[in-house]
Length: 73
Image 1 (tube, rainbow, N blue to C red):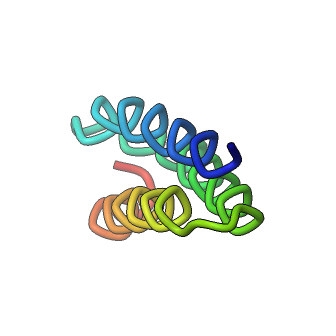
Image 2: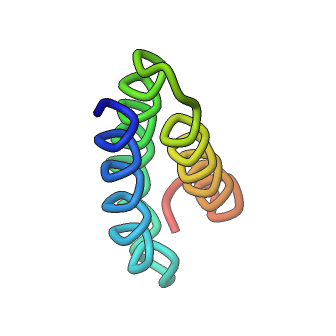
């Protein structure tokens, strides 16, 4: 059950990251990366790894976007 919850958190975060790819909206990732990491923590409690791994990939994508944009753009 926690794996499904973690996957849903990751999916919602990924959907919310789509507008954050647009220039000048990249600062939205400062809110979304911690949410994805929270989903990964929930996935760590689960016995399966799928949700955790998905949330970590989403968080890495958001962190990469922040790195490329210099943290603001």
